[in-house]
Length: 562
Image (cartoon, rainbow, N blue to C red; front, side, top):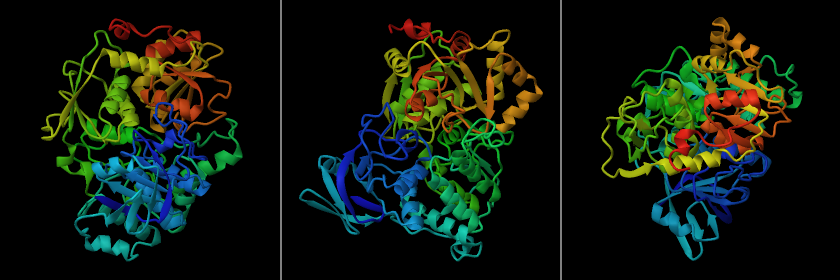
């Protein structure tokens, strides 16, 4: 069956992506070229193609990047998925409905998807998908009508203003595509669309603010693209800094809290188990569902604001308990003597092993991961999987949920860690930059790094930078950790993070960077156009002092036959 999600009449050559793609961080936002160095179609372009992929993955910001590609004339003509997909679908919906840039979105059954993938071109009309000698009828999305409350209808009738009316129209359209039959109240929202990845983000936010948009539930904000108070002093150009700060200001104008962190679970007021929330930012979504037991789908940029303006979200996906059950059981061979680098590496590998379904990780029952370990695991998992959560037997709160009847099995062993270590360490041994805080560093991570650096100095040729949220900055300022880090030569930057940083805050002369983040090790080659080294926090401290990355993997990998 072929389902029409977003209508448009287009034709063009097919580009078949073997794996899901994070359009943010994986695609050049000006040209449409795939820059994710780990993707099988690296170097190909989305521009002008009918793009097929199983589903998207990675960042919630992909919706805004797709809109930016449309503005730049570099967007795909259509997107065809095999699984459910919300992020790019929303970007296509916004591009057409608000700005007149038509991008078709279809979802095919697995059998029809495989047949189409063998063709070289296709045409999409309002009623059919045509390729080769075949013409498949397109069916509308949604098998049941969406039941709206009296309050929902009031939004649609414009009772709360133009911006809220448009927001509810978008929510209702996407809810139908997701198969939802009703909406749910949410208690809080986290906005991801405040990162200035292209002018499209400011265009959307400014339009909604000018239409009178005001949030109706407590709303926090993600890391932004500049240090809001200091970007001019840091040498950021007016051309970039003014719109980047203006984007943040537009959301604050609409009532969002200027928390400016990609780790909202580090804030004092964390969601509780079973609480329906609406978070964007992939690592935050995965952490909220998996570690806190709160409930949120991976909301796309722009949808986050729509929900904030109405307090309502489609009751679909992992808002429903039956959709939180694991569909793949992954047995992990726990390496002897592992260090903290194990957790982000495991997250990346689990995502690769479960790119489109919720996994249950077994084999870690005897471990005691810290909140920081789980943060690192969830963030790295989000780079390789489209799933909004995971379970860890004996550790996460819903790990006892029975697997679905069709759940299958996979394993992760020593060879997988050895392979990934090589993949994450393609750069030269000489390092110019140690990049910490993707997601934002916690107060405990700052304290741990300060302890590793106490009494020593960073190498004069190595910039060592920690990015963090404003709340964490206040904490480490008050407890003296900030002073200890700065005494060792470490630079601390709030508001932005490594996934939104740009030159000159990112040192222009740096050729090789080192990080302890699996998320940034994955995205950095494409985002920064630099080579990468990866290691534990202790290895990052040693590299900060010496300027040299470890010449060999740690013992816990080497002992396993690297």
